[in-house]
Picture 1: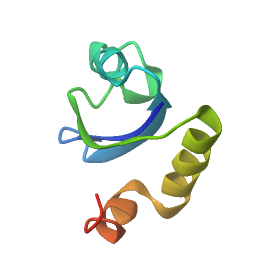
Picture 2: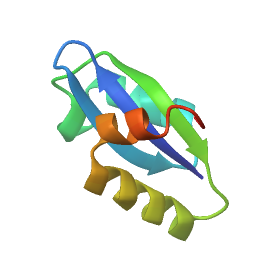
Picture 3: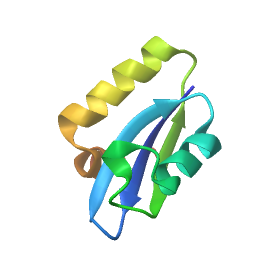
Length: 80
């Protein structure tokens, strides 16, 4: 499982998610098939973190969303 943060230069927005297949998921985001990201195409992966299971992925995703993706990246830049 992966937890990932995407960034869109077009909309200056971040998107946080989780998936087992990060390359396929990025393709779906950039194809316009994901409602919440279709207006920010193209999206780039700015962070990807592999975790061992879905519960760990959900916990990290929630932690990032509570802090905010940009703040999370800034706070953890030294270890990412």
